[in-house]
Length: 112
Image 1 (cartoon, rainbow, N blue to C red):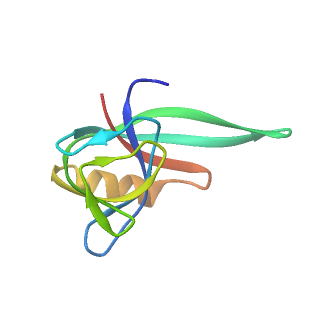
Image 2: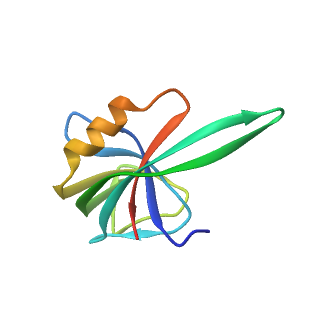
């Protein structure tokens, strides 16, 4: 565990909600994500390996709401999928990173 609060963003809904999956640690409302990160998944013989490509943009997006199984909760549970409502600056950078990601690359938002 790296101690970083991180959420992999799969897509952005027309409503602006970020859709994806949380990593290991619970992320509470009010958390401000400060970077967009990129990871590449590589296949090596019979196994898969994740390569952290690091931060690709600085952002300041604060978590305002979490939708989980069609209800609002106060935390993104570790290891779960959710829809996030965020406010702040950097959404354009996140959209750009999602559009530019190659096959096998994944985009996440992280708070240190």
